[in-house]
Image 1 (cartoon, rainbow, N blue to C red):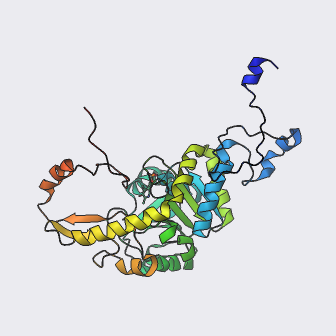
Image 2 (image 1 turned 135 degrees about the horizontal axis):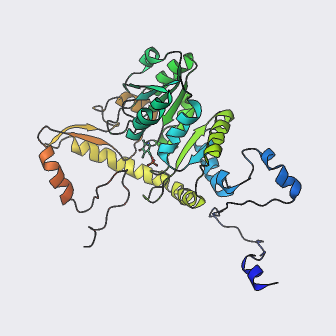
Image 3 (image 1 turned 60 degrees about the vertical axis):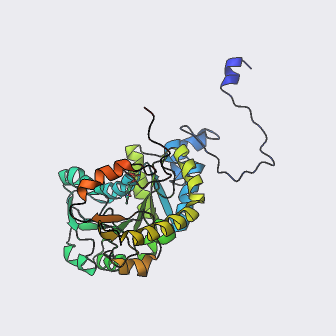
Amino acid sequence: MHDLTRCVQHPEISREGFRSLAVPTYRASTIIYEDGESFAARSQRGFDGYTYGLHGTPTTRTLEAQLTALHHGVRTVLVPSGQMAVTLVFLTFLLPGDHVLVPDSAYGPVRNVCRDYLRPRGIDYTIYDPLTDAGIAELIHDRTKLVWVESPGSGTMEVQDIPAIVQAAKARGVMVGCDNTWCTPLLFKPLNHGCDFAAEALTKYVGGHSDLLLGSITVRDIALRQRMKEVLRSLGVGVSPDEVALALRGIETMGVRLAHVGRVSEAFARRLQDHPLVEQVLHPCLPSCPGHEFWARDIGGSGGVFSIVLKPGAEAALNPALTAMKVFAIGASWGARAASSRPCR
Ligand SMILES: *Cc1c(COP(=O)(O)O)cnc(C)c1O
């Protein structure tokens, strides 16, 4: 064999007796076929078959199956970010003329996509009070296709009465999607409560180390998964197996990490309640948090993120206090390890 040919042919080696606990990272664009017939019939492999790297590899399928099992769903779709997990549901199921309900407490960029992308394309939206429970029924009209929930909400931390919202939506044949990033399937399983979509930013607790971006949508109805996969296929969106490999590693320790941050955040929130500059602590575990009763009924455990409202006048001290911090770094997202030091100059 010519040396140049050898360079492009990895030799076959024995795999007998080799089993690892790690999930192999399969990187692929091209996927190869046994013969001309199977190549010609590749479209009949369906969405679960392997046809092209963009649409899935055994690495991505492993994480999908793991999230599906955790959520008691039937399938999971992976996307490149948590934001895309939310927008994929919107882009797939909302058509011009349709209407979506989005809570005031939703992750900020979700509101932006409604205003800047959906509305110019003839898809209408209403921002609703996240503490509207069964009252959501009054906001649903004939064109309403989807109710979005996010609980606890971003920043303002309201815990929503998801069962009541689901009941009102289902009575009108409206789908419900839930951004479940704070809870993860370990604290709350939206599909068990009647939601059609459980969306998550895996960037946060599944990843766990501030070094990856990934999102997921888990469904109970395979038809919903097929439609989202068709949109991803048309748009040419897939996820990197390297990101997924990091997520597969991260998810192994998610249980212990979440239990720890939950304990620490609850204790820290209780402590801050007595601080002279703090007006209100917004942590779902505290009765002072709007929707605390739904947290106690449906969730009962905690993620790490919570908010505080400072007393009037405390703003002036905020920036100097943030700048003076030695262990905590300043940035968008949910935090991970402590920053070891200020950048070198
Ligand atoms: C971070 C976050 C997202 C977006 O996740 P990215 O992967 O950063 O795009 C969506 N929803 C919630 C609640 C989040 O905290």
